Each structure stands twice: as structure tokens, then as C-alpha cells.
Length: 428
Image (cartoon, rainbow, N blue to C red; front, side, top):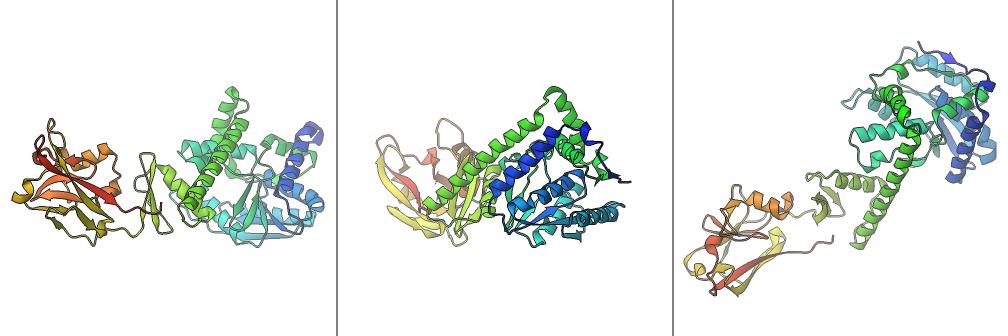
């Protein structure tokens, strides 16, 4: 059963650690700025971290001029959940702080119970009326979060951990304890004779965060005593890189005449582009962005091939293909390209891929599948289906970027015709 706890006497705790907590909170509130008259809601679970946060914010309210209240989320996952809510209510009554609680239903998802509870909490905080929300995450939480995200293969955003100052919708998100370790939080609780409750689930190592805290953390500390600070510092570097990436993407979009996306949309664009998935397609302002082999490609959102029909080529120098977004040009050359004499004997037409096509652009090598040749040439998968192909009867004679099949190449010095595909330029 969860229990209410009080720390040992203040003399057993180093006063300097408690002072560090107070200094960190002051620094964060000063950085946030403009808090006078604002409504700050502190997340209060009843654990030592949130109790210390509430005590700190209550003590600093006169200096910064904000209006403080507390909010408790009752997940109903423990038989002690109602007792925890009563403890939080009584604590706020002692401090003279307005208190509200909300019951939530935690829907177990494939991401696990921890993620489901976190999502329910976040949704509850998003609904409350406030200018800012203060959460009690500290340095140990930050290090554990970064380590967990790295282990599950998260990208730049996940490796950046939690920001000291962030946003939850239109609300400011404050984490005044994020730069101090759990030991300092406990020291502050001891110095101020605070009581708190213990959640029995914190000892359950089946939960990933607890496993990292109780097993992995102590093992790391035996070899790297400052592993928490090191991971937090790495998170700041990752976050800085993320800010740089956001600025670069905003500048790129502006340069191409595209509307600026919201911060949430921008982060989602960066996440998908950073995933490296060739299936990722990010629509924005009439353009679809994709990534392939480290490069970003853009195409008009409405470009489709559904309106294209096979079209005969009778020797024209230009052939407009609006359904494919461009035109084919045919340049007269000698000793290369398609043998001009074949035009008088054979019927040529423009078509699209149907699957299984083969081409032999090098007479010294056997024919290969169009798929393999496109892969080797670095043609993105989504582009391949809309590239115009030149056929002679049922046989493929030419493909953009790959060249003319050896069976159709003009003899040395003989007149030939060299096709060239010119797609229309898009805005990005």
C-alpha cells in the first residue's frame, strides 16, 4: 500500500542542495518572463517531486506575481488513487492554494500502460484553463527520458528530451526542477519538512522507466558518476540542432514562396523527413515533400498519372505530356540515340511502366530490369511510375535517365535521335 512519508531531520540533508533547487526555480521563472498576473497551474501527483514544486512555486509567487493553483490527475490505476487525491487536496488546503482534480480513463494501447497514462494526463492538462502549466520533472527524469528514447530508436526530437520551457497548445509549459537531480529535490523536502506519498508502482520494474531507474541507472553510475548530467547536456545539443533544422526548413519554404507552417506541422515535417522512410509523403501548401537517399524532393500535390493515355511518336521534335507534368524533346545527333531509319519502319509510342520491363543501355552487358536500373540511378520510387517510356511495339526502347536500348542505337556516324525528358519546374 502507498504510504505518506516525511523526510528525516533537515540536519541530515545538505542545505546547499536544497538551495540549488530554489535557485534553479528562480532562474527558470525569470527566463519565462511576463508571469505577473498570469495563472500558473502546478501538476500535483502527491509524490515528492510535485510536492517540492508546489512548495517552491507557493514561496516564489509574491516575488513573481503569478496566481497559483494545483491540479491532480486521478488515473484510478491503484487502489490508493483516492487516498492520493485526498492527500493532495489536504496539502493545498494547508498552503491556501486552489485545488482541482480530474478522473481520467487510461486506455491501454500497444505503446504500453506508461504511454497511455501519459497521454491521458496530457489530455487532462490540455483542457484546464491556465496561462502556464508547471511540471515537476527533474534531471534524473530528463536523463532517463533521453536514454529511453535513444534505446527505442527515436530521432532528433526524442533525443532532445524535455524542454525547460515549452508549449502545450497555447499554454506555456514550465519545468522549474529540470536542471537539478532527484537527490537535491529530496534535500529540499528534508530542509522544509515536507510530507509526500509513495506510489507503489514506482517499484515495478516491469515498467520501462522503473527498470532504467533501478537497474540501468545504478550500473551506469558505477562507471560514469555524472551520466545524468552528460545525457542532459547531450539533449541540449540535440535540441539546438533541432532548432537549427526548424530555422533552415522555415527559410527554405519561404525562399520557395510557400506558406509558413505551424510549429506543430513544422515538427511533424521534420520528423517524417528525418525518418528516412521512402513512404513518407508530407503535403504542404500544394506541394508534397519526400526524402530519398538523403535528399529532399518536392512535387505538386495534384500531379497524377490517371489522365495519361499512351501517345504515338511520329518523329516530332517536341511532344507535350501535360498529364505527366512535362514534355519530351527529341534532338537530332549522329552516332548515338535511336536510329533514325527505324522511325520509317517501326511504330513508336509513349507509355508508362506496367511492371517487368527490361532495358539494355550497355551493349556489353545483358538487359536488366527497369526497377534495378532506376535504383542504381537513384530515381526515387514515386517518380518511376510517372516517367514517360518510349516503346517500339511492345519492346522498351528508351527510359529517362537510363538511355537507349542497345538494339535501337544508331550505328557509328549514322543519324540518330536522342530523347530528353523535361519535367515542369515546381515551386519547391
